[in-house]
Length: 325
Image (cartoon, rainbow, N blue to C red; front, side):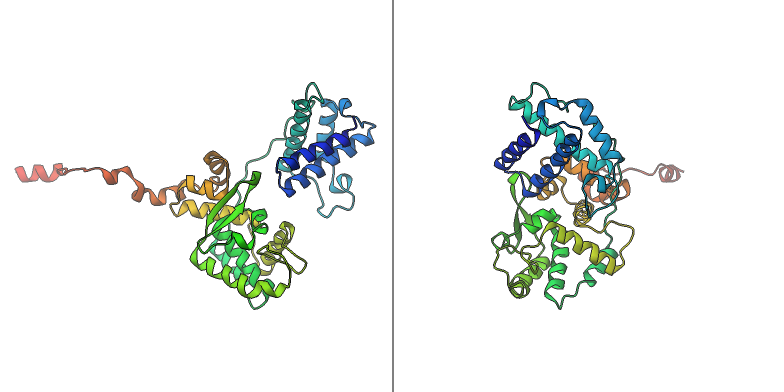
Protein backbone atom coordinates (compact mmCIF):
# COMPACT_ATOMS: atom_id res chain seq x y z
CA UNK A 1 0.00 0.00 0.00
CA UNK A 2 1.29 3.44 -0.89
CA UNK A 3 2.04 5.46 2.22
CA UNK A 4 0.42 8.59 0.79
CA UNK A 5 -2.86 6.74 0.18
CA UNK A 6 -2.91 5.40 3.73
CA UNK A 7 -2.20 8.86 5.15
CA UNK A 8 -5.15 10.23 3.18
CA UNK A 9 -7.43 7.53 4.64
CA UNK A 10 -6.14 8.35 8.13
CA UNK A 11 -6.95 12.04 7.63
CA UNK A 12 -10.47 11.16 6.49
CA UNK A 13 -10.91 9.03 9.62
CA UNK A 14 -9.67 11.90 11.82
CA UNK A 15 -12.10 14.26 10.10
CA UNK A 16 -14.95 11.80 10.68
CA UNK A 17 -13.99 11.67 14.36
CA UNK A 18 -14.44 15.44 14.62
CA UNK A 19 -10.85 16.63 14.73
CA UNK A 20 -10.55 20.41 14.42
CA UNK A 21 -9.51 21.95 11.10
CA UNK A 22 -6.25 23.18 12.63
CA UNK A 23 -5.46 19.69 13.94
CA UNK A 24 -6.15 18.13 10.53
CA UNK A 25 -3.90 20.71 8.87
CA UNK A 26 -1.13 19.85 11.35
CA UNK A 27 -1.48 16.11 10.66
CA UNK A 28 -1.46 16.67 6.89
CA UNK A 29 1.62 18.89 7.02
CA UNK A 30 3.70 16.67 9.32
CA UNK A 31 2.75 13.29 7.83
CA UNK A 32 3.13 14.78 4.34
CA UNK A 33 6.68 15.82 5.18
CA UNK A 34 7.44 12.28 6.38
CA UNK A 35 6.05 10.79 3.14
CA UNK A 36 8.08 13.18 0.95
CA UNK A 37 11.27 12.54 2.93
CA UNK A 38 10.82 8.77 2.63
CA UNK A 39 10.06 9.07 -1.07
CA UNK A 40 13.43 10.75 -1.60
CA UNK A 41 14.96 7.53 -0.22
CA UNK A 42 12.86 5.41 -2.56
CA UNK A 43 10.44 4.31 0.16
CA UNK A 44 6.83 4.70 -0.95
CA UNK A 45 5.04 1.72 0.61
CA UNK A 46 3.71 1.58 4.18
CA UNK A 47 5.05 -1.91 4.88
CA UNK A 48 8.66 -0.88 4.14
CA UNK A 49 8.81 1.82 6.84
CA UNK A 50 11.06 0.76 9.74
CA UNK A 51 12.06 2.15 13.12
CA UNK A 52 15.52 2.88 11.71
CA UNK A 53 14.03 5.04 8.95
CA UNK A 54 11.84 6.91 11.43
CA UNK A 55 14.86 7.60 13.63
CA UNK A 56 16.68 8.96 10.58
CA UNK A 57 13.66 11.18 9.88
CA UNK A 58 13.78 12.41 13.48
CA UNK A 59 17.46 13.25 13.04
CA UNK A 60 16.56 15.13 9.84
CA UNK A 61 14.01 17.21 11.79
CA UNK A 62 16.55 18.01 14.49
CA UNK A 63 19.35 19.11 12.15
CA UNK A 64 17.57 20.59 9.11
CA UNK A 65 16.55 24.19 8.58
CA UNK A 66 13.17 25.35 7.29
CA UNK A 67 14.25 25.49 3.63
CA UNK A 68 15.09 21.79 3.65
CA UNK A 69 11.79 20.90 5.30
CA UNK A 70 9.47 23.22 3.39
CA UNK A 71 10.71 25.19 0.33
CA UNK A 72 9.73 28.85 0.47
CA UNK A 73 8.95 28.53 4.19
CA UNK A 74 7.92 31.77 5.89
CA UNK A 75 9.31 30.83 9.31
CA UNK A 76 13.08 30.37 9.16
CA UNK A 77 15.45 28.34 11.33
CA UNK A 78 15.47 24.97 13.04
CA UNK A 79 12.65 23.31 14.91
CA UNK A 80 12.33 23.55 18.68
CA UNK A 81 12.51 20.26 20.62
CA UNK A 82 8.87 20.77 21.64
CA UNK A 83 7.84 21.03 17.98
CA UNK A 84 9.80 17.90 17.11
CA UNK A 85 7.97 16.20 19.97
CA UNK A 86 4.71 17.04 18.21
CA UNK A 87 5.97 15.33 15.04
CA UNK A 88 6.79 12.22 17.07
CA UNK A 89 3.31 12.18 18.63
CA UNK A 90 1.62 12.53 15.22
CA UNK A 91 3.77 9.80 13.63
CA UNK A 92 3.20 7.40 16.54
CA UNK A 93 -0.56 7.98 16.43
CA UNK A 94 -0.67 7.37 12.68
CA UNK A 95 1.20 4.05 12.79
CA UNK A 96 -0.80 2.88 15.81
CA UNK A 97 -3.95 3.53 13.75
CA UNK A 98 -2.44 1.38 10.99
CA UNK A 99 -2.08 -1.46 13.51
CA UNK A 100 -5.68 -1.05 14.73
CA UNK A 101 -6.87 -1.14 11.10
CA UNK A 102 -4.86 -4.35 10.46
CA UNK A 103 -2.69 -2.60 7.90
CA UNK A 104 0.42 -3.47 9.94
CA UNK A 105 1.09 -6.21 12.47
CA UNK A 106 3.16 -3.86 14.66
CA UNK A 107 3.96 -0.16 14.74
CA UNK A 108 7.48 0.77 13.61
CA UNK A 109 7.13 3.95 15.68
CA UNK A 110 6.40 2.17 18.98
CA UNK A 111 9.95 2.75 20.30
CA UNK A 112 10.43 6.18 18.72
CA UNK A 113 11.35 8.63 21.48
CA UNK A 114 10.72 12.36 21.77
CA UNK A 115 13.73 14.65 22.31
CA UNK A 116 14.08 15.99 25.83
CA UNK A 117 12.54 19.40 26.31
CA UNK A 118 13.84 21.81 28.94
CA UNK A 119 11.04 22.90 31.24
CA UNK A 120 10.81 26.66 31.04
CA UNK A 121 8.46 28.97 32.89
CA UNK A 122 6.51 31.14 30.48
CA UNK A 123 6.59 34.77 31.70
CA UNK A 124 3.16 36.41 31.82
CA UNK A 125 2.02 39.95 31.08
CA UNK A 126 2.28 42.57 33.81
CA UNK A 127 -0.28 45.33 34.38
CA UNK A 128 2.08 47.70 32.55
CA UNK A 129 2.32 45.36 29.55
CA UNK A 130 -1.45 45.04 29.28
CA UNK A 131 -2.07 48.77 29.67
CA UNK A 132 0.53 49.57 27.00
CA UNK A 133 -1.02 47.10 24.56
CA UNK A 134 -4.53 48.43 25.14
CA UNK A 135 -3.27 51.99 24.67
CA UNK A 136 -1.60 50.95 21.40
CA UNK A 137 -5.01 50.14 19.86
CA UNK A 138 -6.64 52.94 17.87
CA UNK A 139 -10.15 52.61 19.26
CA UNK A 140 -11.45 55.26 16.86
CA UNK A 141 -11.05 52.80 13.97
CA UNK A 142 -13.03 49.60 13.50
CA UNK A 143 -9.95 47.36 13.44
CA UNK A 144 -8.41 49.17 16.39
CA UNK A 145 -11.55 48.80 18.49
CA UNK A 146 -11.82 45.16 17.43
CA UNK A 147 -8.21 44.52 18.52
CA UNK A 148 -8.86 46.31 21.82
CA UNK A 149 -11.85 44.05 22.50
CA UNK A 150 -9.92 40.92 21.50
CA UNK A 151 -7.21 41.77 24.05
CA UNK A 152 -9.85 42.23 26.74
CA UNK A 153 -11.75 39.05 25.88
CA UNK A 154 -8.61 36.90 25.90
CA UNK A 155 -7.41 38.45 29.15
CA UNK A 156 -10.81 37.99 30.81
CA UNK A 157 -11.58 34.46 29.60
CA UNK A 158 -8.27 32.72 28.90
CA UNK A 159 -9.85 31.01 25.89
CA UNK A 160 -7.69 29.55 23.12
CA UNK A 161 -7.14 31.76 20.08
CA UNK A 162 -8.84 29.12 17.91
CA UNK A 163 -11.88 29.34 20.17
CA UNK A 164 -11.90 33.12 19.87
CA UNK A 165 -11.81 32.90 16.08
CA UNK A 166 -14.62 30.34 16.14
CA UNK A 167 -17.00 32.50 18.20
CA UNK A 168 -20.38 33.10 16.54
CA UNK A 169 -22.89 35.82 17.32
CA UNK A 170 -25.22 33.24 18.86
CA UNK A 171 -22.42 32.23 21.27
CA UNK A 172 -22.35 35.61 23.03
CA UNK A 173 -24.48 36.19 26.13
CA UNK A 174 -24.53 39.09 28.62
CA UNK A 175 -22.64 37.17 31.35
CA UNK A 176 -20.82 34.44 29.45
CA UNK A 177 -19.69 33.16 26.05
CA UNK A 178 -20.03 29.65 24.67
CA UNK A 179 -17.02 28.15 22.87
CA UNK A 180 -16.26 24.93 21.02
CA UNK A 181 -13.03 23.53 22.41
CA UNK A 182 -10.74 20.63 21.60
CA UNK A 183 -12.46 17.38 20.74
CA UNK A 184 -15.63 19.28 19.77
CA UNK A 185 -16.41 19.82 23.46
CA UNK A 186 -18.65 22.81 24.12
CA UNK A 187 -18.31 24.83 27.30
CA UNK A 188 -19.31 28.17 28.83
CA UNK A 189 -16.83 30.79 30.06
CA UNK A 190 -17.84 33.66 32.32
CA UNK A 191 -17.22 37.22 31.17
CA UNK A 192 -16.72 40.38 33.23
CA UNK A 193 -19.52 43.01 32.93
CA UNK A 194 -17.08 45.67 31.69
CA UNK A 195 -15.73 43.34 29.00
CA UNK A 196 -19.26 42.29 28.10
CA UNK A 197 -20.13 45.95 27.57
CA UNK A 198 -17.16 46.49 25.24
CA UNK A 199 -17.95 43.30 23.32
CA UNK A 200 -21.56 44.45 22.89
CA UNK A 201 -20.36 47.83 21.58
CA UNK A 202 -18.04 46.17 19.06
CA UNK A 203 -20.78 43.82 17.80
CA UNK A 204 -23.46 46.49 17.54
CA UNK A 205 -21.40 49.44 16.33
CA UNK A 206 -18.06 48.53 14.74
CA UNK A 207 -18.54 44.99 13.43
CA UNK A 208 -21.16 45.96 10.81
CA UNK A 209 -18.74 48.39 9.15
CA UNK A 210 -16.64 45.44 7.89
CA UNK A 211 -19.52 44.68 5.48
CA UNK A 212 -18.95 40.93 5.68
CA UNK A 213 -21.91 38.56 5.44
CA UNK A 214 -20.86 36.09 8.12
CA UNK A 215 -21.95 35.24 11.67
CA UNK A 216 -18.45 35.01 13.18
CA UNK A 217 -17.96 37.61 15.91
CA UNK A 218 -14.51 38.82 14.91
CA UNK A 219 -14.05 39.82 11.28
CA UNK A 220 -11.29 41.12 9.05
CA UNK A 221 -11.43 42.91 5.72
CA UNK A 222 -11.68 39.54 3.92
CA UNK A 223 -13.87 37.49 6.23
CA UNK A 224 -13.68 35.75 9.63
CA UNK A 225 -10.50 36.53 11.55
CA UNK A 226 -8.00 33.64 11.47
CA UNK A 227 -5.63 32.32 14.14
CA UNK A 228 -2.60 33.51 12.17
CA UNK A 229 -4.13 36.98 11.82
CA UNK A 230 -4.63 37.26 15.60
CA UNK A 231 -1.04 36.11 16.23
CA UNK A 232 0.25 38.74 13.77
CA UNK A 233 -2.00 41.32 15.46
CA UNK A 234 -0.37 40.56 18.83
CA UNK A 235 3.14 40.89 17.37
CA UNK A 236 2.24 44.22 15.77
CA UNK A 237 0.65 45.61 18.93
CA UNK A 238 3.56 44.38 21.04
CA UNK A 239 6.09 46.21 18.87
CA UNK A 240 3.94 49.33 18.77
CA UNK A 241 3.57 49.27 22.56
CA UNK A 242 7.27 48.58 23.16
CA UNK A 243 6.59 45.44 25.21
CA UNK A 244 9.78 43.49 25.97
CA UNK A 245 10.83 40.61 28.19
CA UNK A 246 7.80 38.49 27.36
CA UNK A 247 6.48 36.70 24.31
CA UNK A 248 3.61 38.78 22.94
CA UNK A 249 1.09 36.17 21.83
CA UNK A 250 -2.48 35.01 22.48
CA UNK A 251 -1.13 32.00 24.39
CA UNK A 252 0.76 34.29 26.78
CA UNK A 253 -2.57 35.99 27.49
CA UNK A 254 -4.03 32.57 28.33
CA UNK A 255 -1.20 31.98 30.81
CA UNK A 256 -1.71 35.48 32.24
CA UNK A 257 -5.42 34.82 32.81
CA UNK A 258 -4.67 31.50 34.53
CA UNK A 259 -2.01 32.84 36.88
CA UNK A 260 -4.08 35.86 37.88
CA UNK A 261 -7.17 33.71 38.39
CA UNK A 262 -5.27 31.52 40.87
CA UNK A 263 -3.45 34.43 42.48
CA UNK A 264 -6.75 36.15 43.27
CA UNK A 265 -7.96 33.02 45.09
CA UNK A 266 -9.78 31.32 42.19
CA UNK A 267 -10.55 27.59 42.46
CA UNK A 268 -8.25 25.29 40.45
CA UNK A 269 -11.13 22.95 39.53
CA UNK A 270 -13.24 25.82 38.17
CA UNK A 271 -10.23 27.21 36.31
CA UNK A 272 -9.67 23.82 34.69
CA UNK A 273 -13.27 23.77 33.46
CA UNK A 274 -13.11 27.32 32.09
CA UNK A 275 -9.86 26.55 30.26
CA UNK A 276 -11.39 23.43 28.73
CA UNK A 277 -8.86 20.96 30.11
CA UNK A 278 -9.59 17.25 30.43
CA UNK A 279 -8.47 17.19 34.07
CA UNK A 280 -7.27 19.37 36.93
CA UNK A 281 -3.86 17.68 36.66
CA UNK A 282 -3.42 19.06 33.13
CA UNK A 283 -4.19 22.57 34.40
CA UNK A 284 -1.73 22.25 37.26
CA UNK A 285 1.09 20.87 35.13
CA UNK A 286 0.77 23.62 32.53
CA UNK A 287 -0.15 26.74 34.47
CA UNK A 288 1.33 26.38 37.95
CA UNK A 289 4.94 26.69 36.75
CA UNK A 290 4.90 30.47 37.13
CA UNK A 291 2.86 30.35 40.34
CA UNK A 292 5.58 30.29 43.01
CA UNK A 293 5.51 30.00 46.80
CA UNK A 294 5.48 33.79 47.21
CA UNK A 295 2.25 33.94 45.20
CA UNK A 296 0.80 30.98 47.09
CA UNK A 297 1.35 32.41 50.59
CA UNK A 298 -0.40 35.73 49.94
CA UNK A 299 -3.81 34.35 50.93
CA UNK A 300 -2.49 32.01 53.62
CA UNK A 301 -4.14 33.85 56.50
CA UNK A 302 -7.53 33.98 54.79
CA UNK A 303 -7.53 30.24 53.97
CA UNK A 304 -5.73 28.89 57.05
CA UNK A 305 -7.56 26.11 58.97
CA UNK A 306 -6.62 27.93 62.16
CA UNK A 307 -9.43 30.39 61.43
CA UNK A 308 -11.99 27.74 62.42
CA UNK A 309 -10.29 26.66 65.64
CA UNK A 310 -11.03 28.09 69.11
CA UNK A 311 -7.50 28.58 70.45
CA UNK A 312 -8.67 29.50 73.94
CA UNK A 313 -6.63 31.69 76.26
CA UNK A 314 -2.93 31.14 76.86
CA UNK A 315 -1.32 32.72 79.92
CA UNK A 316 1.94 34.60 79.57
CA UNK A 317 4.34 32.65 81.83
CA UNK A 318 6.49 35.71 82.61
CA UNK A 319 3.50 37.78 83.66
CA UNK A 320 2.21 34.89 85.76
CA UNK A 321 5.51 34.63 87.66
CA UNK A 322 5.60 38.41 88.34
CA UNK A 323 2.06 38.37 89.68
CA UNK A 324 2.97 35.63 92.19
CA UNK A 325 5.81 37.77 93.57
